[in-house]
Image (cartoon, rainbow over all chains, first blue to last red; front, side, top):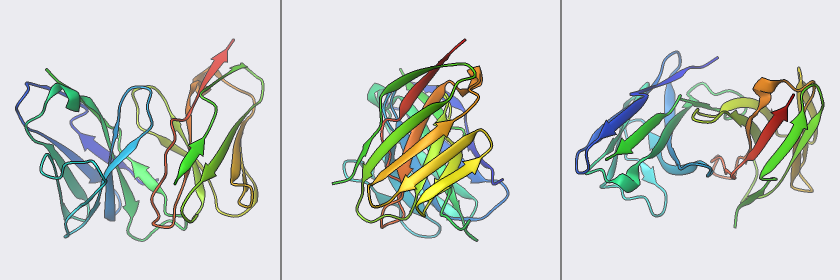
Length: 118
Length: 109
């Protein structure tokens, strides 16, 4: 099946610093990648939809200047959390949709990145 | 609005069968996914239904009734490793997954 990787798996940073998370589709091309955030015992929350070569579409309430998304190629999207604060500590998960498409628009999920801001 | 309703938590015994129900309301509908999520991990795909009826896949089966906005996931021959959260996620008219909080399934020996 399609594989999506994320790097790093976990990161601890100081308040005020920026953190970049990479999401790669390893064996397929992804026109669309999605970034989610999940707080403990809560549902996944879609932050933004990223299309290769164009600006990301952010969900209501998500600050686009704080969560910078770049989808420069069909296999790589990055999320940069700028000036991170403790309330940004969360589990960040990306997913990707296969360019050639499964017949049912399945999203393949990366393993997630746990961010802790001190 | 869009809404997903699943039980928060269920408990079952190893070797038994459990059915996790899901009702949903979405703006448009392009099928429904079931995902499994272990604590601290990303969701993994279990099943997809777009037409009414039952889809069987090994120990797991999923059912859909579009007219009722209802789906269930049936897990047979439960194993301890099945302890996880199960997420019902319909695909709306924009092909976006709509997530609820999921059902935490606890398996006891």
